[in-house]
Image 1 (cartoon, one colour):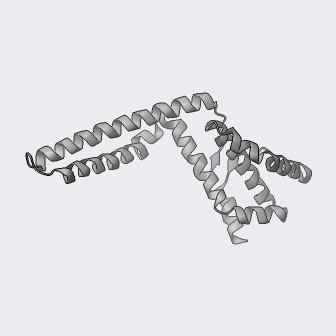
Image 2 (cartoon, helix red, strand yellow; image 1 turned 180 degrees about the horizontal axis):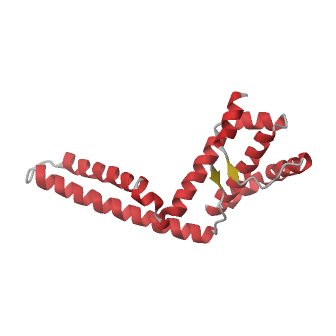
Length: 173
């Protein structure tokens, strides 16, 4: 279950820039260290050591990924980036079945209506966090029309939670 959390866009961008810089510096340091170590251990002086350099960089990528998805994933300094990743992943899972969602919304299916409202709220937040106001402006009419439909049907418009079971129920229909 994913839930939208209030985020200040300016603070979010500052924190994600910081976490990106930390991960990038870690990767560069690991790649350089592992490449140098590989050349030192297995390379030939004055020889072609490209494969050892590439191997060191590849190992640096793998270790960096393992650290980010492992121990760093729960660190407070990476939390905004993790939240953004989870938000975008949730939105993408809805986007992948949007044709079914739209079809079921037309049939006044409450689950699809709630799912579309979550999608709109999540997309709005993502656009705010990414400072993408032009994309948000294009959706405003659709969002307002859907919200009015929800109010007319008596469905709560504050759909800040995403339940993956909603997608499964739509796929079965």
